[in-house]
Image (tube, rainbow, N blue to C red; front, side, top):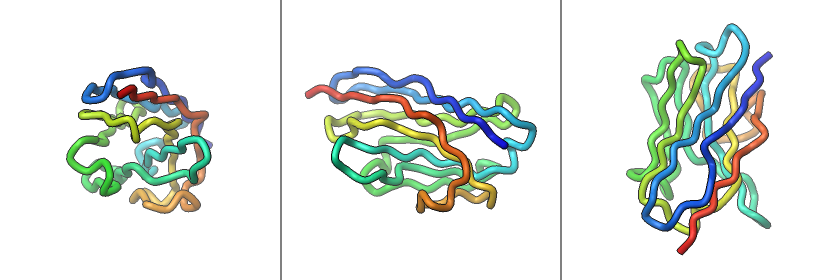
Length: 124
């Protein structure tokens, strides 16, 4: 069992930066692939980024590639999402998720545990 708690969301102007954190409980955090997803009002949940259990593999949605960076610290049981050059279209609730396979996934149904989400609002 893994419990996930996101933090770091907020209001930022376009072009600014935010760093999201997702703290996990449980002894086997290092075995999980981790992902970040987001959901804007009236839209479906969409993939943002994922990272394998070791951090050796990372994956990004085309819309955030080159602007966002996912990383993890297994000793701290935390995964991060550094978001730079933010745009108004990045406004959404951001969720972190954990999947048992260990490799990360683009597909939200592959994830087993979810956090409660943190709001990110980018003003123009």
